Amino acid sequence: MRINHWISAAIVAISAASPALAEVVTFDEFPSSFQGSAPVVSGSLTFSSTSSLVGVWTSAPDIGAFNGTPYLLDYTGGLLSVSRTDSQNFTLHSFDMALGWYSSSPTANVDVTYYLAGGGTSLQTLPLTLAYQTFSPELSLSQVTFDLSTGGLGGYISLDNLNVDGAAPVPEPETYALMLAGLALVGTVARRRSR
Image (cartoon, rainbow, N blue to C red):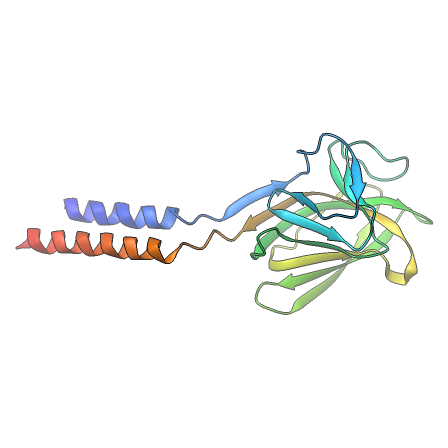
């Protein structure tokens, strides 16, 4: 009876050793607005852009969406790419997005390309307005890109509250060896006691 208890405890410990890394990327760690051409890193995600106007804003724009908290703003004459900083796959549950500013209209479409973890891509065109909307793709990805340059029109994307689950770190081979040795020891003790 006691051995079964130890085996159950070992199985629970092994299962709990590799949880998914869940987080909501909010950009709240940035105390003031900035812009630049370098990638922006927030939480476990890296935001790269072919635009030189990517950055985090902490205040309301003259025209465009504002949700009261810091948010990523990118001029998308280029392409905004989002991936895990450690290059692992991640699940994108949801994100908030709005039109940060647009030259000729209070509405626009953004082309979102999801690079699926299993290979291939999925393209979705999302309608944007000057108010934040929540989109929920629920996809396992290696990367996602946002493109507002369709038709040659410029504009800005405001992006916030990316709800993601990341892959747990892959255990080292020594971890597996130690786990197998422990299970072998538990098995040996169980056999000796049953005699």
